[in-house]
Amino acid sequence: MAAGPQREILRDPWLKKQKRKLLEIDCRGRVVLPGLIDSHTHPVFAAPRLVDFEKRISGASYQEIASAGGGIRSSVAAVRKATRGELAERVLLALNAMMAHGTTTVEAKSGYGLTTKDEIKSLQAIHDAAAQWPGTVAATLLAAHVVPPEFAGKDDEYIETICREIIPRVARAKLASFVDVFCERGAFTLAQSEKVFSAARSHGLGTRAHVCQFTPSKLDSLLSFQPASLDHMDCVASEEISALAENGTVATLLPGANYFLGHHDYPDARRFIDSGVAVALASDYNPGTSPTLSMPFVMSLACTHMKMSPEEAIAAGTVNAACALRLHGRKGSIEPGKDADIAVWDVQDYREIAYWFAWNRCSEVVIAGQHVWSSTRS
Ligand code: NIG
Ligand code: FE
Image (cartoon, rainbow, N blue to C red; front, side, top):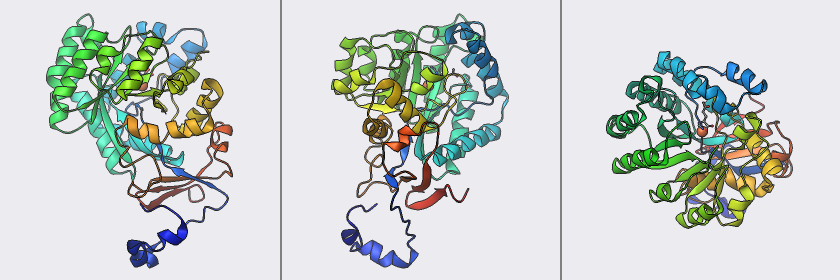
């Protein structure tokens, strides 16, 4: 894109040639931002988890529900049964709803298939949906989400399957840019997570992890793989934070999950920011812990519950999120040479985007220079 003062831009030779084809959008009185980047989502699922929702309302915790057979495992059966086409349709529906909330780039994970075939089917569904959507999608393999039922008690065998079979096949078919792992009590240990990272690296894939969501973990061994991002980060020990800053790894905070699980505590954004760690915000869109795809709502939570300023929240949902996906060369800011992905907001002041919580004020979306969505057209 070209960006700058109008008089300068109009001298641009390419623009002069295209003059008759140009569409002018008058944004006076509105706020223009780079398109939002949702750098952590789980859109490949078949149904909401309403039983879990009600159980939690009656007082059960996320971990109690999971160990009683609910949780992630209860989404797996439906994804295994669904066809690639059905899943792609659901993913596309989510991508379009995200776009209507100002999101133009999305990271999308598999993770509810948990067999070679079903993880590949999930990633293919992401690619099928992405091909019908104007924005950019980065796909992530999350086969290491939980141990599937058929490997119960044999979690190391499942890790072997991931490392020897799933990662190589996914890498060969170029179905994912990243490999993710849920490093947590009840999911995978640090040693198992390192194995997954090591296989990802040897197949040329980037790494990212769900870590420190419910229980603290040491981070140095994961950081040695230069992950693009470590996500959730609710309970991180102080000594881990400086290592994070030195490593250039982004901390992606997901307050939608804290909100939906009814937690009183939120990730300590201030501690990361004040220590020089780049913080990104993402929706964590998924059926178990964060059924929202609204980045403006997540930004509002970050301001009210995590004491991030509105400008920090916007940076976290744009330029820092671009770094979390290693797309900062192309995305995340309105700058000459970057992709023309832009969201226009029907507010007079940028602070209103997070202020009007759960009210979507996005009014226009431009992706790669094309006007793809308008609140007045839909
Ligand atoms: O990011 N923590 C692990 N994964 C998801 C939850 C997925 C689910 O419960 O279905 C998360 O919160
Ligand atoms: Fe997640």
